[in-house]
Structures are given as structure tokens and as C-alpha cells.
Image (cartoon, rainbow, N blue to C red; front, top):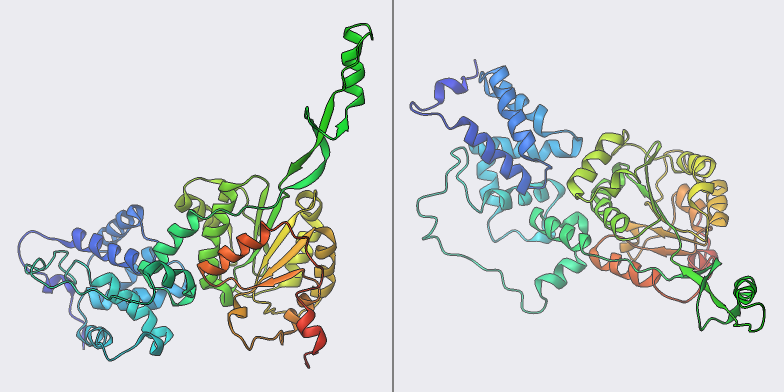
Length: 419
């Protein structure tokens, strides 16, 4: 059968096609896709250039503008067919919104549908760009949870399970987050009238001004300064959902402190320090996306750490740097050369903290070859899967207690993991 043309089904009168594309873009943005005004204009120009032919042509025209990563395809496909009125998928969405389905039973496919239903529900009728006439008369339903506040629930909720609205709220919370780091003594001194040390050079210079008749002791105090912070974040396919939120965390750190160096790695290492210095988070992440070529791909942890140790180690790991290594330890190269590079990285920094989202599971054990190679060369092992874990990381880094080496691997050293 020949597919009907969209132009033949459009009602007569003034067209609303550009407005509908704009409202469709708003639905995608509320569902979590990075869609801005520029993409809306590009979509309208693309439709004007290609023309409104078959539904398939129109679908792929908008797909080429709004979708730039593989994980966005399912969400765009469902949003397109529901917004532009495909009855079977719309029926599935209505079934998903029934109260008989609980959040704990949602699969990955249903999680996408839940985010999409939240994006479609607040305002517009699909395909019309207008609010329903009886919108003001519809009752407002409130989901009241008596035992926990909304903020407490958001703090403990996994990044992977958050809806589009919760992701937006979590990003705002991350942007307001501060990471105090304990100041460390340096080799330099500063003038201090109550300092414990006598500055002999300055004392002799001052005594020469009065002919040496009187000598006033000049004192100095050791200068204290927060150590450099180096972040190495995994952006491979297994870490993709967490990497998005952690990039906001890295941006907040880069704009809150000095001497923060940020790197991402998958199959190659990319320095994004300069990109994250932009104050506007959307502009900063846009530049990161343009510079990173291996997003949501494979993982070669040993290869990337080798490149870091060879090229960047002496530049950014001086003066007692603290390193945050964010990865799940799943290595495509089966840990080839990883232990050697981890040992070198561990010896080059003051403190090496491994942030692993898989630690949210109580039964986690380093069974993968990459995790086995890494676990023996870290000072601390922490989870990073929600806002609460990020706050706990901030508290740990601000603690004045000195780190105890190899404490993180104590559990698994006592009970070796068989291969």
C-alpha cells in the first residue's frame, strides 16, 4: 500500500506546522533531549527544504535534526508517533499511565515511556500545539508522600531511575553544590606578624634601614592551599547515563575552585578542562560534545591511563593532587596493562579515589579483570549514583584525617576473588 501523504491530511486554513514543530521540540526537551531554539529553527528549515511528503520522509527529516546519539532514538521514535498521532502507541502510553503499574516494575523501555508521558501530560494536545479547552476545569492530582519529603527522595534516587523533571532538579542541585577540599601546607611562606618562623632575610633588610641600631623580627607563616583536583571520567556505553550527570558535577567544580583538571575517556583520552571553564553550563557541555569523539563507545582504561601518565601526569599532578577516577571498571582490553598504569598513577598523586556506580549493589565484587587490577591501587572506593553519594564525597574530601593507603581493597584482599 502507498503511504498517505501528510499534506493530503492537513486541514484547510492557516497552517500551524511551524508551531507544531516548536511544541514537539518542547516535548522532547521536557523528556530529556538537549533541544534548544537553534534546533527548532534548523528543523523548520529542514522541513521547508525537504518538503512534507510521506510520513517516513517527515520522520527522518526531524530525526536528522533532533537526534545525535544512539540512546535518543527510542525516545524520539515514541515521541514522534505519539505527538503526530499514531493510535497504537498512544494506546500503549495510556495503558502505562494506569495506576496498576508501579515504578518498580518499569523496564528500560517503559522508563522511556514514563518520561515521555510526563513530558506530554502538562499542557498541549498532541499534534495541535494548543492546550485543551477544559484545561482549567481538570482536577489537579497531587502525589503526597508522608514519610519522606520530595527533596529527600531526590537525594537518594538513582540517576538512572530519574524522570525528566527529576533530572532537571538534580542538575540544579549539582550546580549549587560546593566541594570543600582540605587545605594543605605548601613549600612557600607568607608574611604573618604572629607566625611561628622568623623571616631572617626580611629582618636583616629592615634592620639596615635604621643602621642596625634596632632589629625588629619579621615573622612568616607557611602558606596553605587546596591541592589540585584531577577528574578522570568514563564516558563509555556502560557509564553513559551517569556520565551526563557527572559532567554537570565536573562543571560545578571547575567554576567553584581553581586548579581543576578534567578529562574524559572511552577508547581515547580527551582533555575538557578548557571547555568546562565556560560559566554557561549549556555552552560548556555543547563544547564538550563537539570535542569528544568516543562518547558512549567502548572502554580502554589501561590505554587511556597510559596516555594520561605519559602526557599529562607531570603537568597536573604536582603539589599533592587529588585524583577522582570515575568508572565502573569494565575494560574492553580485559585489564591489559591497567595494573601497571594504576600503580604509576597511584604513586604520582596524594590521594586516588575510585568512584564506581556499581557499588550501589550490596553484592558487588570486583570480578572483571579491569576492576581486579584497579582495586589494589586506590586509597578509597566510593559509589557515585545519586546526589547523596556526591555529598558524601564532598564530606570525605573536606575531612582533615589523612588517607590510609590500600584501605579500599581490604575487603577483597582478605577474601581473594577467583577468576
